[in-house]
Image 1 (tube, rainbow, N blue to C red):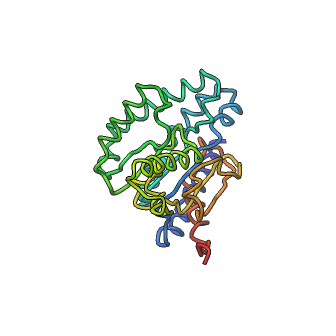
Image 2: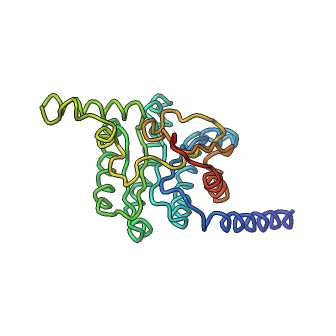
Image 3: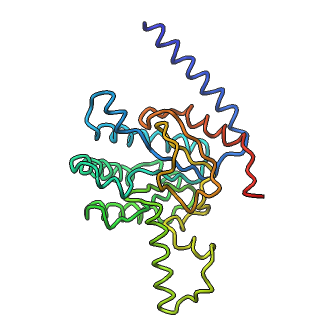
Length: 260
C-alpha cells in the first residue's frame, strides 16, 4: 500500500514537471480569474459541515497565490462569495465571514504579499459585510495600495449585474451633477467605474471554474466578453498545481481573435 502511494506521488511530480516545462516558455495569461466552486460538496462527501469545506478552500487560495507568483501571473481575481450567497444558512455565512477575517489578518503579515508587491483588493458590495470585516478590508487595502507588481482581487459580496448597475448609477450621478455629458458615455468611460478599474488589465485572459459546473454565475459579466473559459471537474479544495498548468496549457493552445 505504501509503495503504491509513493509511486503515485512520484508519478504526480514527474507529470507536474512535464506540464511546467510545456507552459513555462509560452505566452502565459496576464490575468487569471477563478470561480472557487465546490467547497460545500467537498465537505458533504466527507460528511463534514459546509464551513470546513470553505476553510479548506481558503487554504487552497494560499497555495494558488504561490503558484501564480511562480508563473509570474500579474493579476488574479477570485470569486469567493456572491451577493446571492447571503441566502445560505446563517451559521454557514457567519463561518465564512470569520474565515475571511482570519485570512485577511494573515495577509497583513504575509511576507509574499510585501516581497512581491501584491496589491490586494476586495471587489463587491462591501457595505453588505459585517462592520468589523469592512474595517479589516480597508486596512489590508491601505497597506498594499501602493503595490503594482501583482494584483490579488477577491470578489466578495459580489454580483456581476450589481457591478454593472453600480457603475451605471455612478455615471448617472455625474451626469445629473453636470460632471459628465450623456455623449461622454462610451465603453472606455464605463470601464472606469467598474470594481476592477484599478487593474492594468481588467479583462481576464482566462477564467477557470472548478466543480464541473459550466457557467459563469454572474462573474465579471462585462470583463469576460473575450475571456477563454476552462471548466474543471474538480472541487476547489482538491485543486492542484497540475490543474492550473493544464488550464494554462489549454489557454496557450487556443487562437484568440477577439472577433476579428
